[in-house]
Image (cartoon, rainbow, N blue to C red; front, side, top):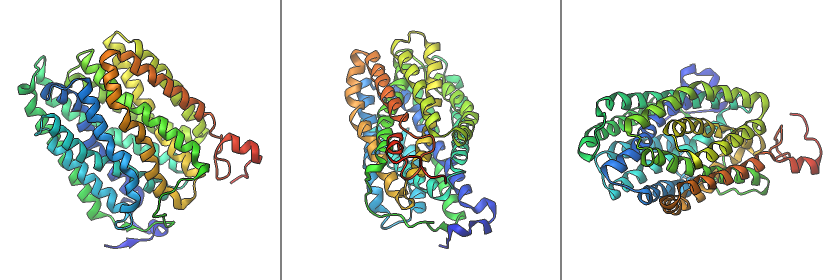
Length: 416
């Protein structure tokens, strides 16, 4: 397979350049992952009779590969990052395609594990490739655009589910739900597999601009990035696991209702994510992170006391938009990091992100059985901690100016 120097990509047709490949992968991932995520809670609740403890356990299993993302560093000794990203997409697609055919706790656990290995290893390597292939001035804009493209694809996937469940009405129970779940999981998984094969066949292997370290990297000057990632992982679990499950369990949203909400989420995010990418480029990561964390404090506070299904649905949509701003963390790291640290630090960051993701879902699932409000109150506390940390990000982060504390000690950072 041809290896193309990254410095010479301008000689390629625009559709064969790295940004175009990132676009193809951004299209491929949501087709499987969005279908899997959209239907998981209803599938588990209706077909496998899950309760809060069961869904917490499955989510803990889902996060184990994320916790072990640190192993990516060692896989890169044997396979290129670009190839590993495509292989991971194939695993995500295969695991998703199998899900509807195994409606039991252990069946869902198995397909969840396969899909999760694909998803988390893809996300780890994709983050590294984005920061290597995109210039610092273009990265916020392109990452926002890629997020918008991903939302467009998810919108299509959710639209497919929405139309497929139009006739479900008030039907409930595993016998009624099994057929659409099987077909929809299969369709989403196969679509991702097809696009992954196209990405493998149509694009050259792009050489790294700067050789990446093939060892673990933990640097003291990256401590704020690590902290932001850790608290982001903890907050995200409360949204991914319990905000979804609350709508199904407390407010009795069926699959059609949930998919309608997800369609709204991604329809809005098609425009919101690129807009916030431009805002990040204009105002900086500190302002965007502050906006995100203040918004999450308000949303989690409302979750803790919500009694109306309409209000809960509105909070769900707003919550999803705020969590879409995570690319500001990535561009902050890009500005402070050594170029050779992108791949190993992406792996380390995913492991840090998933420390809470592996340990929290099961005990919080038990807590949810007694007090759903307490789970969301914990989310408020985590969002406040994130806000405090986010305010330490400088207006213009750079190497040597990783935090406002560093800048105060060292004086003004030199202009780039």
